[in-house]
Amino acid sequence: MPVRLRPTAPIAADAVLVGDPGRALMLAQELLEKPKMSNHARGLWGYSGKTPAGTELSVMSTGMGGPSAALVLADLAELGVRRAVRVGTATALREETAPSELVVVSAAHPGAGGADAIAPDAELTAALAGELGGGAHRGEAASFDTLHPPGGAPPTPGEVADMQTAALLREGAALGVRLAVVLIVAVGASGERLGDEGEVEAAKRAGSAAAAILSG
Image (cartoon, rainbow, N blue to C red; front, side):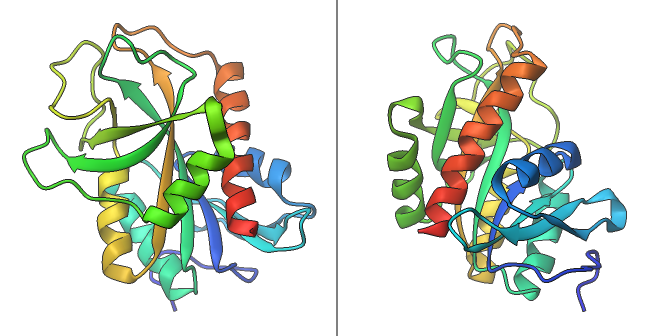
């Protein structure tokens, strides 16, 4: 039995991972025909059901920060998850990266980039980039233990900063869970913010692409 999750419905082998429980509910309603809540323990809302294509899919919140996300992924792996796509938010580290852009992560650097970069699953990442087409581009992420302030000195390399991607990719590699990541740029390098409505629309686009490749 997993330590943190207490599933009340079967967990699918494929999952979409988001940090925010509210976004998990929104995407479950968007992506699944009859979503059933599969976890509410610790406020980590999760849902399972079938996509319109008829495939089983779970949508799971992972909480805030790398440690929480890694622990949730470990429990999901124990419950049978074998492939996952993270749909997250990030802060731009370059002025040319604007709010609302979608970045398909090609590599993630722990902290300020001193450690070796961690790569996502190549096949899933290529499929995700192909599904999103011109609506996204590939880029590298840097993952910090605290929220990266807009205008802070950017690591090299790294186009966007978040709090989960590197930890998830590291844990996924250790557990044998194939992972791809798409990040919504929610905050620009100078502090300009994407509004709530814009975040919802971007999350729907990213989530739909994730569900499509996991259903294929």
